[in-house]
Length: 119
Image (cartoon, rainbow, N blue to C red; front, side, top):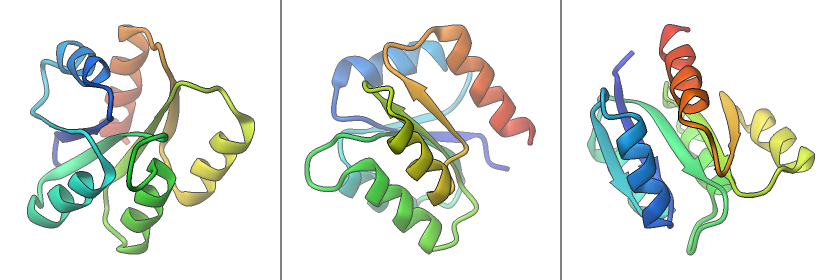
């Protein structure tokens, strides 16, 4: 699997934090769901998407559904500021690999990303 990671979050601080935490990986940073889907159409070597739930234009669950509908062999980790069983369950049913609640610990992010690429 490709090791390029697409980080989609409308909060610049979160994008910058992920950039520091995952500095060993090649990252693409975008601020909304439309840009995320555009990147996925253009770049064929993305293996993982870190995807925020609450964003303007298209929310993260809709983006996840579109990724899986297109049958792209890309793993998705959902990022959310809210711990919600319903959102976690929906994300899982849509095919998310995992679910991270912000603020997250850097060790937690690194471990989940490593597990994602190891499977």
